Image (cartoon, rainbow over all chains, first blue to last red; front, side):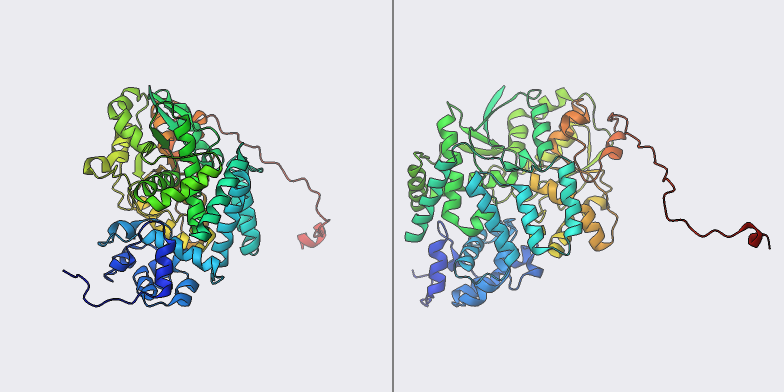
Length: 190
Length: 326
């Protein structure tokens, strides 16, 4: 028995989202029930709720989706993912949308994009994250006005011995860099 | 002694140093033997996955491969940070479920002379190990200073129960693990419906208003139940609820003041360790008042004598005495 009677036209955008999500996103199974948006602790501040985003992906609205703040406001709490009656990998799809927004230069949430990029920059050069560098770079770039407030918090972190001034580095950093470079090549060609 | 491979994660070295210190202080008492994975790297948090997903899985894959090579018969990796726990278990699980991802991650690992066979390592959170392997009886045996009267909100955060890729928490009985442990320490556990809600993760770096609202909601829930302390299991949760609590107060003109401590710190206190041994004192919201009520001895606080200001200001005009008299 055929479950879907009308063949749904798969837009190029939908196809790309599916291809770039590791495993099977199950996006095609969305029944637009809205459990995701209803469960989301951040839905109120998102441009579109996850349910709407999935309808937009299926409609091929690439630019609107990738320019929206929705994937960047996802806090990866997995509430929607466990409540989804169709078992759609919602959090992974949000990661895919972030990847694509950066890749296509459509990301409008610069603070989030740069935070991610600075973070992975430290990981790629040291193998470990580096809170102090991350915090200062982010604050200087996006909160120069609020710098007094954040500097007080940052200073607290230092005086309470909760932040290192220098990044720690793994021993076999070359091995890690080779692995990451190979993975990046594979991602482009797949 | 129960032995596990140990993945500390980056936070345990700086922002969550007190989590590490307190874990090290109690581990032998409860029979926990931890073998740190040599040369482990960052799990990628959410940031690496936001930029490139396959390299992020390869980043996690290196940790899995190193653990597998160093396991020497051990088959469990313990992670005390919920975000690390999620990333390690998710990559492990996805590699097993998805051949294409497994091939790609192993091709990348192969370039560095490593390989990981899905299914060879089990990833478990510290809470899971304490509750299921150590057990409440052993904990109770070691309690010398019960936390009697301390009202604790046991806060799990997101990533222990969700997405639970290995179905470790499906038994309803174990869904009270944290509360049960706190009660075993003698504490009074308050009703805390927000116990598995999100601490806002990295939202403070993206939108402060959104983040502070999430933090307010969590702190308020504990305050409404007159909790003395919020107990946490994750560096990110502790950081957001503690470090940003004052900022959030300013933002909403509130006066909340609830200290946020790690599970291991509360265990240590009940086991009779002193606050110093448990890294207590590095919090933004001082837990001293709450803990002194349950008999925790703190070293005498240094009272700095108030320095009298020397009169070095500019000469001020004074009213001549004859004018005053008139």
